[in-house]
Amino acid sequence: MSETLLDHGYIPEEHAPDPVLSHGDPTAPGKIGIWLFLASEIMFFIGILGSYIVLRSGSSLMFAQHAEALSKPLAGLNTLVLIFSSLTMALSVDAAQKGNRNRLVLCLVLTFLCAAGFMVIKSIEYADKAHHRTIVAAVRDRATPVRVELGSDAAGKKYYAIVAKPDGTIFNGTAFAKKTDKDWAAGAIPLQDQGSGVFVGEVAGGASGVAGRSPVKVYQLAKDTPSTKDSAAKLPKPNAVDWGAGMYAYDGHVHRHGDGYVFSGYRMPMESEFNIHLISEAYIKEKGGEDLELKGKEPKPANFIEDKDITDQITYGPWKNIFYASYFALTGVHGMHVLGGMVPIGILLIQGLRGKIFAPQTEYTGLYWHFVDLVWIFLFPLLYLI
Image 1 (cartoon, rainbow, N blue to C red):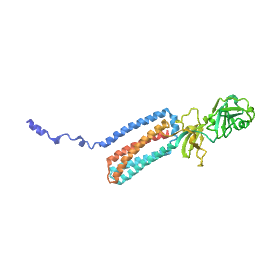
Image 2 (tube, rainbow, N blue to C red):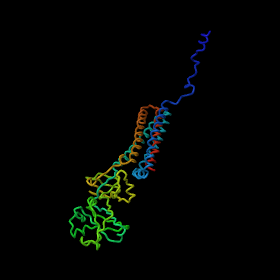
Image 3 (cartoon, rainbow, N blue to C red):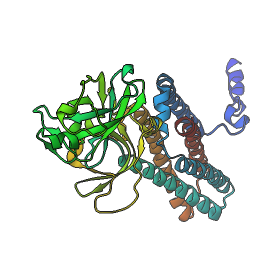
Image 4 (cartoon, rainbow, N blue to C red):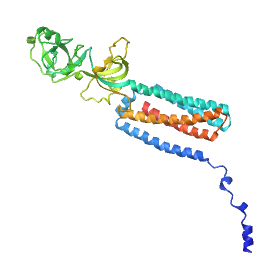
């Protein structure tokens, strides 16, 4: 009897129904996979964006000054391009789900072109950094300012500076000469009283680069125009002399021009404490730096820097400073994600042209692409606007 009961009780058709069939279609494994992948990407970008924010908070002024060298118009254009690509990607997903092949192909083409356009604009930005650099160079063939501090008791008196080499020869406007009466007159540089014992004059073109490394003597003369060494009264000893050691810091754009560079940007005398990695165009402008914008294309413009005069230079690459290391890291990683998104978009486009539609895969690609666009929405204000 027990066997009979067992035979009648074991009916396969009366098994509990498959939960998959009874609760409708589950979430597709592909969609779960893409969401898990995006979750890992979110954690990755939170890490690098958080690091950037911490670094910026520790050097806010330096980050702000160097951010001025970034192109806001190009970044703004890229933002519009990516926002439009999100729209075309969403339309691609809708077309794939409705089986509209023509609209799918059109929207995928537009999305792919937007991605390519983003990378082209980004490459223009990167190329600009190669032409933007900080240069330390001697100044030749033009006037070099000299700043002399004599003390507050010197106010209202007339002083001249004499630039001399260690061997006693004097700069007379074009070269260094022996100490004759004529040389004293030709080599004396009148100093203008700026108040508080500070006097400023200019060394004529030709001495710069040499004069800055030479000792300066200051004379108080009986007449406005010195004639001989004997006409000098007491010789006050300068408390300080500053002309940047004949060297200037340049920051701006350069273009190769023969045996040097044509420079467009700003320059200032070298400061006593100088770090080529931290100097920016914004900093030099803030200090009242001289504007050397290119005015013409003559054989050797006034803003021409010879290779032999350059002692140090650095481009605006990731080695420039911590700001540009962060900039290239963030935009570079994001750019690789854009290139990565172009691969599945291109594959789906090719399949669409062949008459095949893959609705689920188009949706997964769309989720990834929206994430890439969202990351840029965070990068744009953090790097370019704040």
